[in-house]
Each structure stands twice: as structure tokens, then as C-alpha cells.
Length: 419
Ligand code: GCU
Image (cartoon, rainbow, N blue to C red; front, side, top):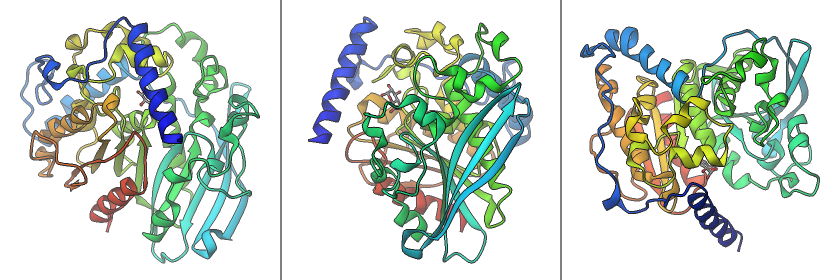
């Protein structure tokens, strides 16, 4: 029943938004236009990039600049002072299998303070340093497990009316298979994404962006960062915290994001080399999917659903994807040589599974510069046939979601690269 409602809402939203944009969403592979992807290995001045040094010193910085100026906005490097307060610790979590900590991370600058709440769960059976997966949740830490000791965060209370079902404990526990993650020897560090930037129109003043000294003056700038940029910044702040935790293996911090958070995870992974493995789950348009295919959601549509996700500069490419001097294979290439995993769902046509696969495939030449193995075939594999090269990929049956099968593949991929 619940699934039916989700599908109905999904179909309805496609209908509404395609009408709102005066465009039909294309789900027909034969109607994908001819397109040429911008060259990954040719610099702006036309120089062919043929080794990792040229990639790192010439081409990679050019592409990072492009994403800052044209898509996600410029990330501020101003230091925001932070304090960490351990609010609770339970060494007997998950029937004794894990230690759970709740940590208040308070960011203060320019007379403003933002309180965020991190939930850290570490396996008790791992005697070595622990690899940790970082990832935002959508509906609050309390939504990831039905446990009355999990706290609600300030920004969650700000954006969610008491009657909203997001208050229900464990309402998204299907997306957070802690038993499997902990059982496989991984820790998890999660935070509600509203904590860093409430995902509702008009709440920017309550986001981390508002702490920065140039907040007001940046509002009118085309390359000002918006929600995705700030979420990416915030995931790096979780790593700052993990760096203070002695049980954590600092060389094995992975980042996972689903959907809009998959977009933010790719952008965070591109910028912050401390993420040693990056996972994009069903990230779609503005994430892993190639925009120039114009299959499923488009740039114009995603920006109309949430006008405050991307920098304003992206708006000039509405219905002009062919003019974009970049496409998402370039974003994925920025993560090289670190392992990156892209995953799709068969029924999630809105996110363009083939476009998600192909951007990972077309990022492969950069992995080759490092003698790493990307994806070998231009055509995606079949359902439930995961690939665990240095670029990983799977498409599973079902809808837009993160489930235990997805985690199973991510943990296999992480085992391969971390163990
Ligand atoms: C909408 C949006 C997608 C986004 C998704 C999500 O469907 O169109 O771009 O990925 O929400 O984050 O759940």
C-alpha cells in the first residue's frame, strides 16, 4: 500500500513538473538526442592530458572550478569554530554488538550558532581501527532505528510540524541496515541533512551557510553555494570530528549518499580527499546521471523542484544541456584514483539508470591514468550483477531507495578496497 502511494506520488510529480516546465519527460531510449561529452582528458587550452601529474595539476583543477562556478557553487574555506559535546553513550547498543554515541556538534561564528546532532555507531567486535561510513539521513537520526534514546535535532524540530510522520522512530530503518553494517565490521556516522541545511524553501538563514562572514554579500552571486554545496561542506565537518576519535581508521572513511544526498556525496568526495571511498545511490540528475542524455529528470526540472539546491549559474543550462561545458563523468573522475561506486534501481527511470552507469563508465580513462580499473563496457550490466572494480556499479530491481541489498554490495566493495 505504502509502495503504491509512493509510486503514485512519483508518477504524479513527474506529470506536474513536466507540465510546469512545459516539457515532456523522456523515457524513450530512442529519443535520447545525439550528444558529445566534453573531453575529460583535454585541458581548456587544448593540451592532451596523458599522465596523472598533468591530470592533478592542470585538468583536475579546471574541472573542480567548473563545478564550483557552474553547478554547485563555490565552497567557502573560512574556518567555522566548532565544539563537540558527547550527549550520550551506550556500549550495549544493538544487543551489545555496538557502541552508540550521540554528539552535539555546535558551529559558531558571527554571533550565530548552529547545533547539529551526530549519531555514531561503532562495532564492538572489531579490535583494530574501524572503517566508518558517513552519510546523511533524510528524516532524523531517530528515523534510522526504533530506539527511544535517539534524540531529535534542532533543525529537524524547526522544519517538521509535530503531526508529520517524520517524527516516527525507525520510519526509515529499512534504509539503515545497522545489523548488517555493524556485523560486517563497519562503523556508521549519520546526521539529519536538515541539520546542515534545512531542505525547505526559506530556511537558508537557519543553515550552516548563514554562519559565514560573506553570507549576505554572496546571496546575489551566480556561483553562491546552495543546499548541495553546504551539505557537502557539512559532510567534511563530520570527518573533522571523526579525526578526533581514536577507534576510527582515518584512512578508511567512506561517504554514502542517496538521491539528493548522492549528488552532495559526489561533490563532497570530489573536493575532500579524506573520503577514501565514495558511494552514490540513485543520485540521478545533478548527481551521477549524464545530463546531456536528457532522459528522465532534466536540469530544468530538478532546479524547479528545489530552486535552492544548485548555484544560480546552473539555470542558464535549462533545456540547453548541449551547451554545458561539463557533464557528470567529469564529476566522477574527480574522485579518482579513490574507489567510487554508482548504483541505480531498475524502476528509478527518473534518475536515468543508464546515464548513471555511463557517466561512471566515461570517467574510467582517468582511473586508467592511475592504472586503476574503471568500468569496461559501455553497456550497463544486468540486474543484480554488481561490478567491484575501482569503479563499482550495480542496478537492482525495484524503486528509488536504499535497501539491504544495496548495503550488501557497498560493504563488499568496501571490503575489497579496505581489507
Ligand atoms: C526528487 C528530485 C531528484 C532527487 C530526489 C531525492 O525526485 O527530482 O533529483 O534525487 O528527489 O532526493 O529523493
